[in-house]
Structures are given as structure tokens and as C-alpha cells.
Image 1 (cartoon, rainbow, N blue to C red):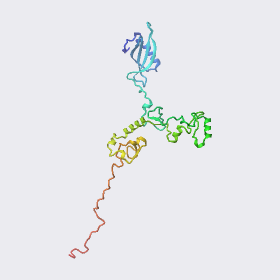
Image 2 (tube, helix red, strand yellow):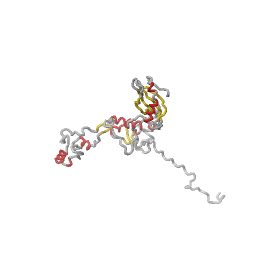
Image 3 (cartoon, rainbow, N blue to C red):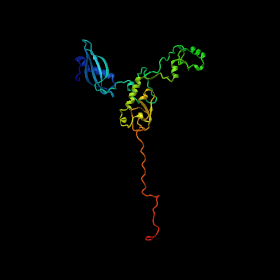
Image 4 (cartoon, one colour):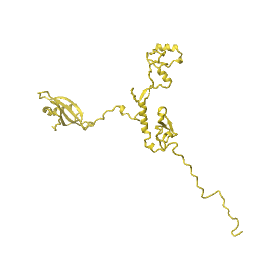
Length: 299
């Protein structure tokens, strides 16, 4: 038997000697030929010992078959407790599981992928409140049943009623007069909008990618705030960000900080004036005067 590896207690002698019993149990649990050499004996407690065997199974490098045996007090018969395959100190293991929400990175989504949003996402806040609660002194009851909705339609003109269609009997949907209906007419039908926290982290992310501290902005002749290719954003982000519309810029179609800049600034350079052509060496347009008489005449 190989040298024993002990913890704080000395292994029980009879249990430590039951190597054949432990090997037989490991071979019964494993596939044929995958139980290797006996590598260690570990004391688990009084008269409880675990025998470790090498695992030769493909894909389980460094793993070990652990067979625990025990015996009762004053008994000489060693019995089998359990057999299990355990990783060793240098075994090949799968990485620790990480939730999908922590693994997801920008750009991971593809066509057809759906990204669920948590109900309490800190980046969002309600676009309006009281969707199912009618405003004070409203003629619309708290719960609109099919009968009540029919009476409402008969009492009012068809143009004064909303598209109130019940999905299930007794389940009200948007009815004219509810806050959801008013929000829809005002263009505020989004149930949730960006919170202040959501705006801040988005602004930090955009400023890190296309902000004043980037190498491109440090070498730019002028910031984007004075560039004619800048399309300002709406809302509060208009004061700090815009969208680049220069097809030759590295930030084309991206949200950029007003302090960002690149060499494609609309006012950074002026096209040089074309140089004036040099005069012709051979003037084909002029005429040279030559004497018409014979040489010596008229002298």
C-alpha cells in the first residue's frame, strides 16, 4: 500500500488496510479499466477512512475515486460507506458558473435574441403611475366588466370611447378616461423610461468611448460642439452629447460627447486654393518678326 495521507487523526488500522474492498467498490461504480493506482488514505473520523484511487477516465484528468469505509466499535468487519468521484488539487474542472446577466457584454445580442429586463431594473423607472386606477371623480368604474363596458358604449358616442376590448371576461383593458389612455394620447405610452441612474451610466459609457479623454479627441483640431456634422440629442442629454453624421469619422452614427473631436471636423481645415499654372515655355500664340529681304540688302 502507498504512503498514507492523514489529517489530524491517525487512520483506523483495519479500515486503512481494506484497500481491496475499496478498489472493488470503485470498480463496481466506474467503467472497466478506469480505476488506477491507490494514491492516499484520509482519516475522516473515528473508524472512518477514505481511500483515494487514480481516475483514468478521459476528460477527468486529476480526478480521484473516493471510497469511504467504516467499522463499528469493537467490530473487526469493515463495511462500505460510499463511493464517489471527486476532483483533486490539480484536476480539470469546469469554471465557476456565472449568471447570464453577469456574462452578457455589449455586442453579444444577435438577430432573434431576446434580452429580458428585470422588473426592478435600476436603469428604468415608471413612465407614469396608476395605470389601472381611474382619476378622481371619473365616470369610469374601478373594474370594467363586459356588462359595464356595454352600458358605457351605449351611453357615449362611439368616438368618445377608447379601443376598450376585453382580453378575458372580467379583465379590463385600456378604457377612455384611465391614466393609461391619457398617457397614450400624450405620447407617453411607454410603461418605463430611463431613470436618473440609467442616464448617468449611459453617459459615462458614451463618454468613455467617445469623450474628451480619448486619444482621437486629444489630437483633434476642434471639439464636436462646433462641428457641422453633429446632430444634438433631445432632452437633458442634449447639453453634453450628440450623434456624429460624418461618414468619414470613426464615430459616424455613434453618440459622442460635445468635447470629443476628430480630424473630420467641418471647420478644421479649408481646402487649399489650386495653384496657378506656370507659363508655357513654348508660346504658340505669339508671333516673331523676321526680315523679308535677302541678307545684306537695305543695310
